[in-house]
Length: 147
Image (cartoon, rainbow, N blue to C red):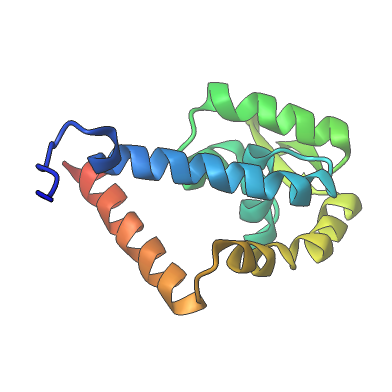
């Protein structure tokens, strides 16, 4: 039986589809975890940034997540309505809004601590493999952004 001929336009050969479909699968895997917090995956990313360091500007959060203000603003509004964050005007510059965790937002971190382990188990991979994959994907992303 002859082997399949390589077709660079076959869907399964597309790097972009592997990344896209993996991101979709990760989203589905995260959903029941995030339901415990009552937040979505994009909101979780915002919380991760704030758990790294509280009291950040909207611009800082957007830069860290590579999100435009128009995308980030609704996420922040929903997190504020959820009681996880508060938006506070910078007293030295009223144009600047600072984002701070509330007590609820800080408490959510304790629940989220188990999420990386749950994702690791669900992936069927070991820590070293996922770290290497994350590093490689970050390198590809950075190269594409610099290109």
